[in-house]
Image (cartoon, rainbow, N blue to C red):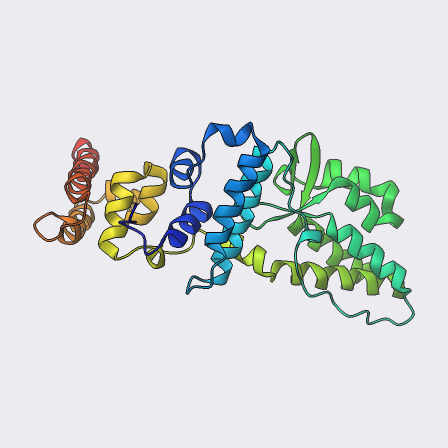
Length: 299
């Protein structure tokens, strides 16, 4: 079937993988219940999607990277395997071993510790609790107290029964120990760890995950009109609102709400636009405008 709204099937798949979830994503990626029962069917589906999204086109490489991350996540869930994306699965530039008096095995030990760090869906870095004891082994006796009493609830999170420490906490601890430590080897290793973490943050996959929602989505669609009509007629509000720029301030300022409605209608109204779904999208804009001004009038 010919694609109406997107520039290609590749653009459609990457958009769905990188930006959607739930029923909207399942529908766009043709995810059927049988994929969760038959591993061969799941692999065939994964391979077909991968073949499409890895084609050489003008789509930004980081968006493809993000889409591949989500595709692998979905596939692992289908075949009932846990999906934990760690630094060891990421290509990043490792720092040089600057202190020649520190054995290579010690640097390798720190590489292994950093490799266990989990990368979240939004590009955050989480240290498994055990890594804190391994990285700061000389402070092992104090680490339990530090984790339980000095790290605030915002600095740690429990997932799947396992405690994780957020990267900001670890970086602050590294800087603190660097300023206090007089041991040349420890200082070299802590500096190496800090540079490694910065390199991980700068890696392609982490940057892709962190920037996935910071865009206007225009490159995926045939035109701006196609983008708005698709969002209004096909997507759940939580996704559509990002694309049509339906922000909270529109519900407290009638002039801004009217300006938003008029600009949208100039693009998608059937009098100016013949794209399939224009009438439905226009009706949706008018309903949204009514809800915006109802809030204003109620006040």
